[in-house]
Image (tube, rainbow, N blue to C red; front, side, top):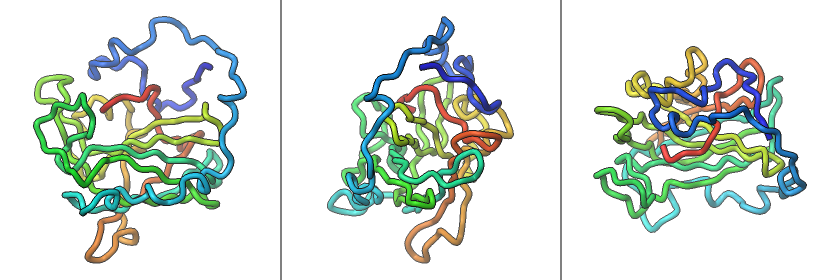
Length: 233
């Protein structure tokens, strides 16, 4: 399979300020690989298979996790603004201290025994999704001196076929680290703003959680920038 960069906001494969791209960027032109049936098909009725149990990342353990509880909601839309139903959104993120529950994460911050940082939700007939989590913390990542990643949530979108996977990151609107983060800056302005969620009082619930709205557009002029490869950061 080969992918064409149809949107000017797509991050380049090689972005020297993001050190890992120096070794990950392809050295040769892409090759088109014929797709098989297992790649062009997928289960019908994702929601029936998974239910809503993973849509609240704060209730997966015995007690509440540490940190600010937040609600994230939005819609998945196509290039004409039409709803895209039955899309699986896989969610993963660091905890409130900026620590992933991952063996390779050596950041000197505590794990939270009540927070795994992984969830899943399926869009409804109107393309809507909603999940509850805690706001993740920033963390150092060694790309350069004094390098810190802004708070972010990873989203992986899986459509009707196993080959239709897209990965992106959601940032928060009040985070000064976005301006100095090479991964965020690999997406040129103004497209970078499509990766920033919008604080929304209509989503916020009194005495319970702050609310953010983040729509994902799959193609076209308003396309959400997606990553080429999955990675740990």
